Length: 452
Image 1: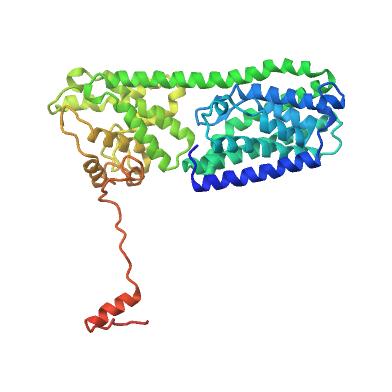
Image 2: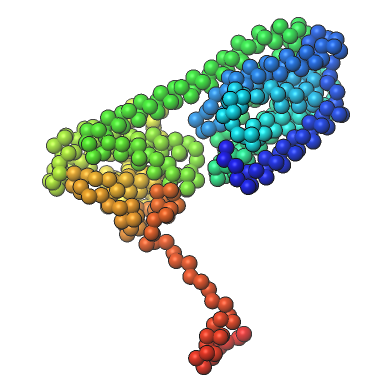
């Protein structure tokens, strides 16, 4: 993660709080005998080492999710260890057991290591404090409910701290990061009952019985990995299909991928949801899929199209939607594919929708598609427009062809941020009252109606 002043300050605060919590946990809460590996006082240290090792194994099986977050099954042994050994066990297991191979290979900067470990250790200690405050934990039902509650506290705090780190690093809002973690939150809490059972079996049968839980825990990890692999395979298939369509014309090779990137950047500026960003991702790739049904004689024609040929070309959004319609998973992308050539004033095609009746994501894609097309060579226009000229066209036709709000958002993306913008309001210096009075006095004038 890139370190800036605010991010550095937050890491420092979290690290200081974690250090104080670590000292307090060790000083005030000795390791509970329940964590002993053999039931004796001499086995307490070995018990901590056992849970650290189990957590290290879980940390090594981390899976990076599509949104950028990292999930690992180390959550279960951390919860089991803190329920057995108390805050001190939570401190040591959270601090040492979450070490990852990329950290040992020095692929993570020191402040990233500090953020990662403190973001796990501090929530683990606080959840252990909360668990210690629950009375009557000798009853199984109370123990289960308390452990589940501690797991919820632990993961909630961890998600909150992580979202704050990511927000300060990338500029996204904390709320958006928390929404993106919603699915992971539920998946992690599903491991809380497993963690409770691991702790119960450790006490009742011994350390070897805990190893039996490696199967369900590893199965959970495989489910995460399989989800990511299937999604990546689906995305690559969609990308290859889009590229195959683009390559029918040497001038449009890579067009869909560039449109996708521009559209997603606009979506981020407009703060669309993560689900909508995914729709822009795949819809951007597939928006021209209907051109697969347009003959080469029309698609590659360098001169002006006839009326009949223009009708064939304008049918590609409808044909694209028909091609994609049987793919249930791509149902959210259908409005983008069908309506990305609608005009804001209602003179577009195929359905002549007007204004807000055009789906928002289709309006976003329309701007991205137009900018990319204008700044690239085409058979009918071998000399592309410069980015400045293309932006001027977007401004000129804002409210006619394009949604002005989407154009405003586009201007704030990396694609146009440094361009001369004819639509950008000029900031004029406001003269001070004394300056006005002085200038008027110098020419012998007096402001009428002045109430200075």
